[in-house]
Structure formats: C-alpha cells, structure tokens
Amino acid sequence: MKTPTILAALAAALFLPGAAQTADSQASFAYTPGPAGGATLTLNGNTVLTATQRGWITATGVNNGGGVDGNYLVGRCGSSDNCVGDDILRRNYFSFDLAGVGTINSAALGLVQPEDAFGFPTFDGYISVTPTLGYALYDYTGASPVQTATGTGVYGDLGDGNSFGSVVLDASTIGTTVRSASTPPALPR
Image (cartoon, rainbow, N blue to C red):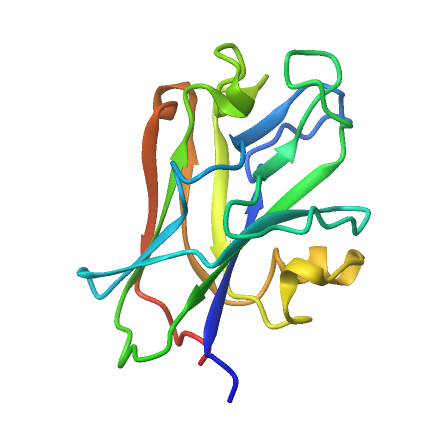
C-alpha cells in the first residue's frame, strides 16, 4: 500500500524586478544538509510533521536528489557574489507523510532561513539584490517520487496548481523560522 504524502512546492522571486535577468543572487532558504533547520508542516494548528524529503529542481530540470537532510535553495544563486552559484533558477520541494492524518483544515509550512547557510557565516539565508522576495507554497501533482524526478515539466509543476499561501522575505528574516500559513482548498490525499 502506498503511503499518502503531500508534496509542498514553492515558486520564489514573485517580486523580482522586470529588468533582464542578472547574475546577482535572488535566493532565499539556502540550506546545507543536516538535522537542524528541517522543514515542518503544521496541520490544524497542532499536528507537526517533519519533511521526509526535501530538495530542489532547476529551471533546466536538474534535481539535486533531495533526501531527508537534502539541501534546499530557491531562486537564483548568483555567480557575481558570495552565493557563488550557477545563476539557474531553482524551486524547492518538501514531502510529508500524511498517513493517519484525518481532515485537514489548515496547513503551515515552516522553514528555517539560516543565519549561516552552507556552513559559512557570510552566506546568509537571504541573498538578494532586491529588498524583498516572495515565497509561495503550491501543491504538487507530478512525477513521484519527486526526489528522483527530472525535467522542466517537474520544475513547472512545482510552481503552479493550488496555492497554499505565501510569505514575503527580506534580510530581517535571516536566522528565523518563516511560516507560510493558509487554509487549503483541498490537500491531495
């Protein structure tokens, strides 16, 4: 029997400037693998689940493979600054085991926005030339398991569908747990 899961995905950089893409970072939630700072999903205000998988897929369809301690990074990690990335946009994914969960009336995704991303004090969890970035949470209905899926279709599916809320990030959220709360239209089961 298949274990029910919800795959929470995000689209980042909702508030990017309309100018041409640059190599400057527009990234948030840069997170290095490890047990601290895991993704959580709070259901109905009191049931807290920890992600069973987390990771990212690029706009070119590359998947980092995730895992229970997988690295997650959303947005564009720029090669011109201390993010030292490849400039390719990423979208995150998180999987939660919903076995035994009854009716879901509300859900809130909790993510640590690290103060020291990638283990380096200067690599904060918010690296952007813009003052704010938007982080939106969507359901996911594509290929499963998502941690082994690749392709631009998967990337696209991680940024559309039912929206379960959003939050605006800025430099003041570094070192905090950011929560995206909403009342879902209907969580997939």
